[in-house]
Length: 376
Image (tube, rainbow, N blue to C red):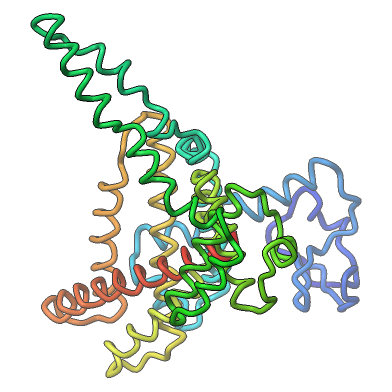
């Protein structure tokens, strides 16, 4: 411990607090070692005060010298170049792309969940809707103005003869009443259909039974309606239960769907990066390089969406379109800077990859919705 630092440190890093060995790993230290070269822990024997604790926390996450701010600055001001520097070995200066994207996606979807009014959509659930058959047509008819009383009475008599209320009621409940009249026989008839019609018929059957006969679990239906116990019947029941719950609380389902989107992103991007690798197969980049490029661009998109959402909340406007346009320009610059190809080639690949992204994204969202319905 004979080497002295050129600049006299302050706070808990003063020379009088320097130790001969690292308190974390026991590695021998010099007086000039501000941090342990073996495990990176601060070389200080001073007891932590409350001020020291929060100072260290802020220094790690909010200091302009930290990885976070360097990553944000490079990502915003140097599209594509941050990826080039990262894959070329300059990794200690920036945060891990995967961890950074995960954090941003969670923050974004938390903001969406808190600021959205999706829960208000529950008022559109079927339990809150006024059935068509409850409309009093005679009462509504009374509001119409006629030239004289004779014409009004003639119109009312024609309405009564048509018996529209009964017609509507019978039309809506015909299928349900057929199922509820003899559910055991109805279910046996379904089993004579082909696989697709049989499965859809069972879903419809269970949907009606759950709504009108208060069946809460599969085993209850087995006993009451003598339904065979097998995976097909169980899957149909579970799906029908989910559909009934979604009908009751559509807003809650949307919130549940949004909560899964951050994790869907991490399954989707590796798959999409494979196509980027195919498009740039002549470039000497590995698949992982393309994946990191995707992570960085997706991180920038989440940053823009977070800013857009905050602006919308404060000023009560819709700014998503503007920020999507900014991202579209940014993505072109990132491709130019990272892959270093001419404008014509970049534009062609830009439109091709974005079209592919929309197609694959639509497929991924469809799969997510289907999976969410089954597991809701």
